Length: 589
Image (cartoon, rainbow, N blue to C red; front, side, top):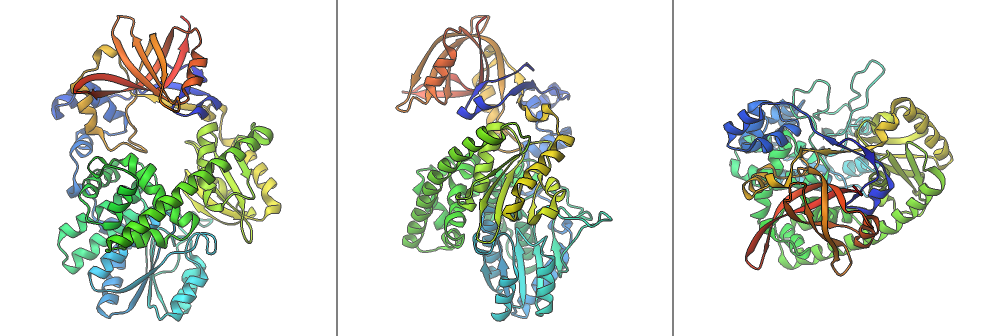
C-alpha cells in the first residue's frame, strides 16, 4: 500500500494534498513480546511501530508509573536552582515567577506558584501580555520587579533567549533562575548561548544528562517542584497530585507522548479524573465533558483551547485565576468566561483560515514554504491558522499579522523541515524569533516580508524534496476484518493515551466491497457503510466528514481501500464490532 493519490479523510481539507499510504515495517520478535506481556503479536507490532525498543522499553510503555520518572537532578543546573530557591525561601526574600501566556506557561506558573506557597516562600507571579509584551520576559517586566522589591526572578517556559534581560536583572541586583525547554541558540563555535543567570535549567542544553530532552516547560517546572518538595520534606503524594497539570501542559504543548511524557500523561489523566481543583472541574463541566471518561483528546482539543483562549483574546491571568480559585461561584464564572472566549476564538479562526486559503490559492500555491500575510488577523490566532494551512497543504507554514510596532508571525512545520533552524538562516531579517523544529514565533519589519518569503523558499528547495511535501499516512498493520475481535479491541486500550508520537493505531484493508452507504446526521456529517472483504466477512463502518461530498466522490464505485480503527458499538444493550474509517480511496474494480 504505497500508491500516491488524493484521498478522502476526516477533514475536507484532505482533498487539497497528495498522500502516500505506507505500511510500517519495523522488526522485532512480536511473538516473544506478546508472550512476555500477555498481548497479541498485533499489539506488540503497534508498540514497536511507536519506536519502543527492547523488553525494558515495552515494560515502561505498558506498565510505567510515576516511579519510572527520571531524577530531576539529571537536568542541568537543577541542583543549583534548588540551592538558590531554598536559600531565598529561608531568608524570606521576594520571589516572582514570570511565565508565558499559553497553556504550557499557564500550567508552569501554576505549578511553581502552588509549590512555592506550599513551602512558605514569599512569592507572586507575572505573565506577559501577548500583545503588549510579546513572548518571554522583557526589560519592562524586570524593571517592574526591581521597583516592587523583588529579589529573585524565576522564569518558566521562557527565558532561554533572555541574554540582555538577564544582564539587566543582574545590574539591578536581582537573582535570576531560568527554567525553560525551548531550543537554544549557539555561537559560532557551536556552544550554547546561555543567559548569565544563577541557574539555567533546560533539557536542551548540550551538557544535559537528561534522558528525555523533549519535555515541555510545564514538565521542567514539575521537576523543579519535585526537587523542592524533596528538599523541604513535603510528602510525595502532594507532588504526585500536581502531575495533573504537568499532563495538561504536555498535551497542550503537543509534546510527543513517548518515554516519560507518556507516563506523565497516563498517570496525570487518572489524577485529573480525581481532581479537587475547583476551576478545572468547572471548566470540564462547562464543556459538557464526563470527568470519569476524560482523555488526552479532550485536554488537547477542548479544555486546553479554553485555557489558551484567555491569553489569546484577553489575559492568561484569567486562566491562572481559574486554576487558583477556591470559590465555587468565582470558578464557575471564570470557567464560563473562558468557554465563551474560546467560542469567539473559534469563530475568528474560521474567518481567518478562509481568508488565508484564498491568498494561498491565488498567490503562493506553488511555494514550498507558505508565508501568508494577514494584516487584520488577531495576532494570537496566527499559530492556529498556520497549523490549519499546514494540515491542508502539508507544507511548512508561517502566518504573519500586523502588530503594533512590527509584523508578528507564528509558524508550524512538517517532518523534515526544522523551522527554528530555517529562521536562524535568515535571522538578519528578523527582529526577534524563537521556537522548536515544528513551531516558531517571530517578528520582522513589514518591508521585509516579501524578501523573507523568497529567502525561506530558496533555502527550502536546497533541503526539501518534492517527496517531503507528500504526506505519509502510516499504517500499523494490514489487518483483514476477520482478524478483529473484542479481545484485540480491549487490548488496544492498553496503548492509550493517544496523541502526538503515540498515535491511535491504524489498520488497513484493500478491495472492500461497498454493500451500502447512506448519509446520516443533522449536518450530513456521518456516512454509515456496510463493507465486505473478499472472503465475505461483513463489517459495519462509519466515516465522519462531509457526507454529501463523500457520496459524490463515490458515484458508481463499488469498491474501496480503507484505513480504519475498530471499536465496540453498544446500542440498546446490544454489542457489535464496527470500524471507523480514517482514510479512504475509491476503486471501480
